[in-house]
Length: 352
Image (cartoon, rainbow, N blue to C red):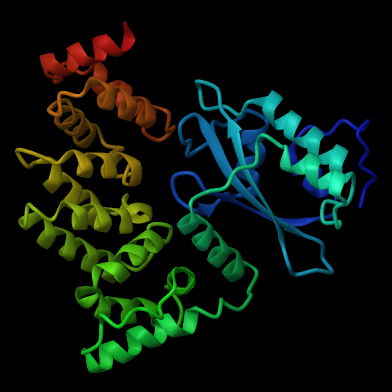
């Protein structure tokens, strides 16, 4: 461990963590909960890359870190501002580092005094994500560090096994906990978990299906499970009153929305005469990877205009155009000769 003092100039968070002698993992906790490769984050910190998944002009990042002699990680949950190009605000990052160094010095994992606690708690860049995100993050960290799941894991797994065998008691879910569901889904590629969920999927009551979909949104999983969710999604689309189930299933497919089968069902949705506003919001918020296609994105923008809500159109357009993987395609769409007069007019109002 290198000596860290308030006088020592530290350029980046990556450098701070390395100098402290900490082992660490990075996670994006903005749009989805997913691993953030260290090499990619280092380039983001040096403004060599825009942040890959911005949310409302911010990078939302979890840093789990620990000393070699301890397996129990500490956790920082950060919300750092980005500029209009999606590059990290260097001043905010440096301010965060200065607060941490002043409070903790070299030992980021030390027991803190009351004064240190006060300094840390006033840190303007720390935030608390939604509980379902924290549950998924906790599960991912345990998997990555090869730790045991929570006490709620086995009751959920047993719930699936018992009801898949007997098929009579799906509504007896009161002992199922959200943390158990995220623990199970974080291990979806282990011990035939995907097969077990596949069998259960058609029978899950909405009280269980909802947190299952929230957990699935953060995982990539086998195509057989993708196809089962797509099949359920198509069935829900046929019952036009079932918008809430459509949005839930789109959510479950979030991390897999680049898959050809997911893009096909998104195309099917956008080829309808009318698409509910809730579904359009879910598509941009969860399945933006499926919209990284000029034909689909143009169709999406045209549907969005039908809501006659320019504020909504503006908000979603700005959100999508901030995502580096979508940005060039969005600009291609707004310059296209194939755009409708209505889309051209709406875009003109955005930039006026």
